[in-house]
Length: 595
Image (cartoon, rainbow, N blue to C red):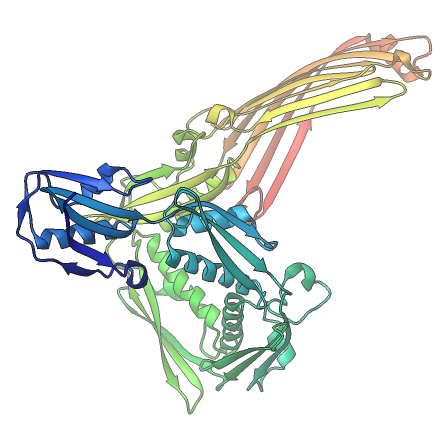
């Protein structure tokens, strides 16, 4: 066999993809065939697809170097050599090992499946090509996760075990150690407030009687950053405009069990507000916007009031179609008088229309069930208040776990936006089954099935059955919240109830009741509605000689069969932002019955 090596790639493991190629002098030749040797898992076709040379083409030194670089760039190979044998190009490839398995030992703080998912996103997973750099990165990431949970004494060791068929097994061995606790938090530079009052603004704290549950005595860089922002807000909401956190020091004892935090601050002077004025393109009467400003001359400066004021002004402009309005407060500080004046500059931007309202995430609920809650119209001016109201109404249907809304500019159209609603469905049905036993009724079985969003239509249906020796109840209820497109609701109720108390030793009697009703609801305004209902009930009462005297008297006077009818009316006002977990609003209801 007469093979001539003409290019050799070396130092791949030491220098990554840096190629150190040695080219022997050779004359360009025409490639008669290409043969690949040394593969165990990779298909030859994969190698062919990366080669810059085909059968019948002329092989040159430049193309040989290109071929080696291309094959190394795939990450599949540890070493690549090219040789020629009687015009046949021979590719000698040594593959990188594949990962056969990844094991964990000693990990209690995390779910191993969650770690596997994280490593998979990183590129380290079973059946993937083994890369030492990725393994080192995964090891460091695991350590960072432990440090974020206050386990500063953690020790992570990785072991790579060669296996047959050019595979490796990876094992992460972890010694978690003890959780590091915060033993002291000191604030240096505070004069206007006591350190105790300032530390009350912190989430982080020293160990207490409930910190075993809250974990607030475990240091976290993110928590500390949040606490420093809370400290800044505390001061700036009380007039200290120039407050600054100069530095923070976090120290840990040599045994990595105790942590001490020192925060150095400069309070600055306390300022009052001398003036707040508006400038720019107001687009709304200045008197109306001025009412939205919470800071008044003479007030102690408060950052939250200033932020709320600028947001309220931006939202008010948003109600007029200025979806991207911006209100920016610029201070003018008088250090001698310790006063600050603010000019709120308004940039309304372009007035925009809503091109489309897009709905996503509703895998079960029909689009029209969501769209009928919209108060913002397609083709109309953008109105931030109507979009927020639409979001609340969709959330109040109780069909969704989460409702999000975003406003997206339309590419190429400066005066149009799309409003995108994204919902996350939640289970809206319930199945309840119960059983019991008593000496009188013996076995009692009950069950109910309810569905608040039947087939994604938004209609409500529930059935209930309760069966015992004495009491038997069967009922069904149905409600269509949009019987008409205007939001008029209609519902039906049917039930049958039998009571056989003849088995009782005291006061035996029997009743058979069949009833039903119809309900209507009419919206008067966005938050107000009235309801009307008509109910009827047919009752048969059978008595015995030992039945209660008032039952016997009633039957003798009116008979044992009678029909009862009643009408109901009601008014309700509901301004809650959510029916499940309301954060604002109220609910009032007034009902009456005549029968």
